[in-house]
Amino acid sequence: MEIYLPIADMSVQWIVILGMGLGVGFLSGLFGVGGGFLLTPLLVFYGIPSGVAVATTLSHITASSMSGAIAQWKKRAIDFKMAGVMMLGGLFGTGAGVWLFAIMRRAGQMDLVVSLTYVPMLGIIGGIMLDESIKTLRAQARGNAPARIYPVNHVWIHGLPFKARFRQSRLYISVIPPLVIGFLVGTMSAIMGIGGGFILVPAMIYLLRMPTNVVIGTSLVQIIGVAVITTVLQATNNYAVDIVLAAILVIGGVIGAQFGVRAGARLRGEQLRLLLALLVLAVAARLLWGLLVPPSDVYSLAGM
Amino acid sequence: MRLFLLLACLMTAVPVQAEELVSGVSQDLIQITSNYTGSDIVVFGAVEGQNQNQGGNHGPKDVVVVVRGPDADLTVRRRDRVAGIWINHDAADLSGMPSYYFLASTRPLPAIAPAAILARYGIGVQSLRPDTVHSHHDYEPFRQAALRHLTQDHLYSEVPGGVEFLSDTLFRAHVPVPAGVVRGQYNVEVFLFRGSAVISAQSTPLFIDQTGLERRLYNFAHNQGFDYGLATVLMAIAMGWISSLLFRRPV
Image 1: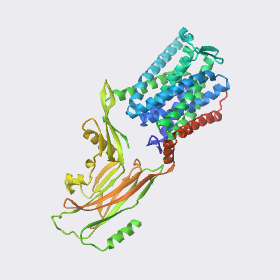
Image 2: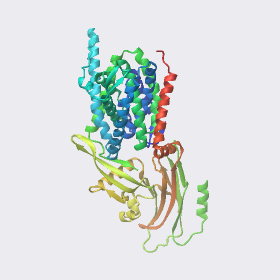
Image 3: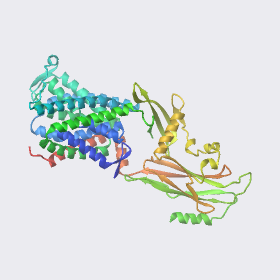
C-alpha cells in the first residue's frame, strides 16, 4: 500500500520504508551503531530526495539512541558535563552544517555531496571492519586472542588551556578538544544525516582518554542532543524533515533495535560483523557506481 | 446522471445559424486526499448550428480538448563528467510552463491544422514554451528535457483520438487527473476546428485542491517550521522511550 509523504512530495510503499527502519534498527541494536550511515543511502536508493533523507534519518537515530541512553543512565554511566560541552560545540557545528546544506541544495548539489562524503566514509569504515573481523576470525581459528591496539598518549591535548574537571570521567582536561569534536560531529550530522557514534566513540577513548564505561552513554546523549538540534534547525531553515517518513522509520527502528539487542546477546558477533562490513562496502560501491557510470538521462528536472 | 440530463438539454437546444461550441466538465472541483491515486474527469459538449460552408471552411470538423494546469517554475539540470564523476554542471530555469498539460483530439494534430496555427493556440506539447528563461546559452535542449520528463511522469500527454463523437454533434473526452498534480486553477479549453481553422472555442475553469492530513502537515511544516521540527523530535523521543518501557529486557 502506498502512502504519501507531504515533504518529500512522493508516494512510497510504506512497508518497504518500515522494512528499512526495521533492518537498520536491528543492525543498530546488534552492533551498537546508530545506523544513519546505512539508512541515508538506502533512502536515497529508494528515491527519496537526498536532502529529505539526510534530515529525516536523524529522527530514526534519536529514537533508537533513546533506549540505549536510558539503559546507560540507569547504570549512571553518563558524563553529562562532558556531553554538555560537546553538545555546545555540536550546536555551532550543526548551525554551520545546516547553512552549508542550504547552499548546496540551492545549487542542486545535494546528491553529489551525499555521494562524495559517503563513499570515502563507508569505504574506510567497511574496510576497517572487514580487516578487523578477518583478523579476529583468523586468530580464533589459530586459537589465540586477537591483538588489541592500545592508545598512544596524546600529550599535546593535555597542554591546552581552559581546563575543566569532568568528575564522572575522572579527567581534568581542556574543554577545547571536546568542543572541537562536538563541532565536527555536529557538522557531519547536518550534512550527512548520521549520528556520528563511530567517530565519537574512538575520539573519546583515544583522544580524550575517557574511561570506556562512560563512553557509550555519554556519546549516546551527545548523539541525541545533536540529532534533536539538527532536526529542529533543518525543519526551520530547510523544510527538509518529513514527519510521516520519520514516523514510519522510527516505528521500524525501535522494534528492530529491540530484536537486534536480543539477537546480539545470543549470537556470536564476528561472522555478523563480517557481513555488516560487506554490506557497508556494497553500499559504498553502489554510490561510487552512481558517480562514475554515465547516467541514462543527463538532464533532470526540479522545482514545480 | 447529471451528465445525461445536460446532454439531453444540449440535444434539444434550438439550433442557431453558425456553428458554435457548447461544452462542460463533469466535475469542476477535485479534492485530492491522502489516498488519492488519480481519477478521471469527463469533458463533454456539442457542436450547435449549421456548417455554413463559406470561405473554404469545408473539411471534417475536429474537436481538440486541452487541460492546462497552473504555471510552474522548473529548473532543468544537466550532468556532465567533471574529473571523472558525473555532477550537475549546468542548469536552466524555465518559468511559465504549465505544471500539467493534457490534450485529446479527434484526429492526430498534424491532420487537423498546420503547426503554426496550433502553436498560436498553445495546442500540442511541442508548442509549450516558457515565458522567461534563465540560461547561459540555448535553452532548447533543456526545454526538450523538461517536456520529456513531464511526459514520462504522465503530467504532459497527448491522446489523438481521445475525443469521440457520440453522434453527429455530441462529443466526449476522458481527462486523467494523476496523483502527482499540483493544486490550483486548471483551465479546460475546447477548440472546434473546421478546415484547419478554429471557428469556435470555449474555456472552463477547474479547481484542484489538496485536502486531508498531508495538506495540513505540509502547511504546518512551512508555516511553523520550528514547532514542526519540535513535534518531530518529541515524536521520536517518545517512541524511543516507550519502546524501552515496552521491551524492558532482563539485564
